[in-house]
Image (tube, rainbow, N blue to C red; front, side):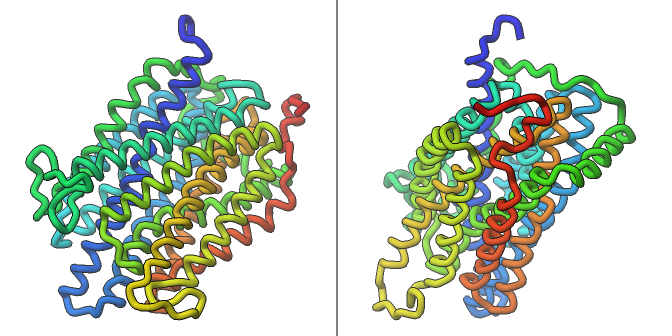
Length: 461
């Protein structure tokens, strides 16, 4: 790392968040997810299903995609992390998963708006999503090396804030120059640039190549400024990696705080991913928002996420991550209660006049909290994991963190899909998230505020 300052290395690390955030902002939540839900719902209505059943079928299809990718990510995360630790190198893995990100995102351009290749589109979405999530495991594992134990909360929060700022800018660019409204014009009243055909939804479909290009360009500072020697080599090949995973899993029996934290974060991060994965589709299917309005909603949420993440990092440094995590969980749980309790016709059983904009206003407020508290929760959770991480095997430890975040990642989509199918309501289908947040809060009771850093000789003054 000769010639590269610590400050520049930290900024290079921040640029991964900036580069990768559009996969979540543009593809998962605010553009491709709602676009796919609309395409699927229209396809099923054209096949003879009434609108409520078509909406439920579309949401179930999206939930199946997130379920399968969640299983792949969760089950593979510890092994992938252990392979990197045994080899002592992380950069080749980051490059490989970055390529998956670019290929998966770029291929979404060929999503047919008539719904004829929906499974093809979901497959490539999944490839890119798996690449993004696996790369994040390795990026997270570099956090302990960027500063002292006391500084990691602030560094983590600033990284998320910087990433969400990138998400805001990328979403604004899509809305102003590419995404067509029903009129065929963008939000700025322009024709989609590059001669993209609004009748074929080419402006919206360009979100895939745009996300891929954004990532490829803004990963350059990361690769230029981050020199990562990795942890000491501990073996070779899959066999040694599996032994390392087995050792870590068996060691959880003696690490009550870490075990409770992994269990807690398993549930509340699953619920948060459910909010991200279904927030846009909820707006499309329950409130009947068009794709551009959902994009504006995304800007509001992403701006709040950037500010809240930065402020949450400061709170983490002052108070530690645990109280920050608890507060964010309670806030997001209340958001879920509100979302489940309203639709176009009523709010908690109180009827609304026809054409009321109150549900829209309330959901915009929910968007501020989903984005803001979600950013805080992710940043503080990453900081808390640092307090439980063995510095001799950081990638493998963050592989366990990836496992806890994805081992049950299929549960939220699967529960949402099942409840949606049984109830026939996309709104009621979101209700399982309430229980997941409650389970996460319950398990936090056994998590030590200072983690287990005393095991590695680090004190918290």
